[in-house]
Image (cartoon, rainbow, N blue to C red; front, side, top):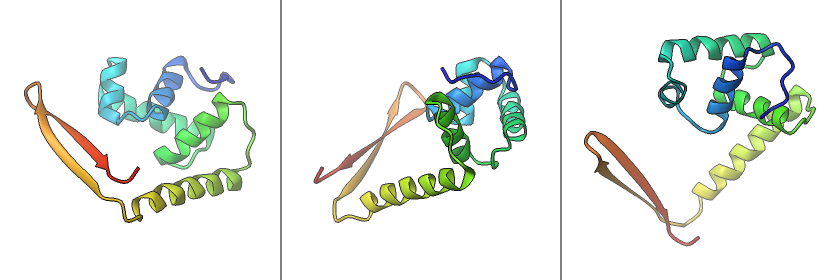
Length: 119
């Protein structure tokens, strides 16, 4: 759990942690047994209280810095996010084949699997 400075409520910390783990808004709402509008409201509150740009990438970077007690100026967080995005995109631009397969799992849910050849 990240170091709490007291400005966020325990529910807001749970919301930020859930988003940092890669969940979507609907998944966060289901996981925390809340409505999606409550989750969105708490997310907006987090952005305002912590002066974070209103996007999930910025929230994840802020949360990870809190979790590992890293003090980074804003420009370094942006540079780090840009570098990570560039590294991720460079893996997609290689000559490796990426195949996508979707199938139904338990009724209406769909499971998508990606297979990257050459790794």
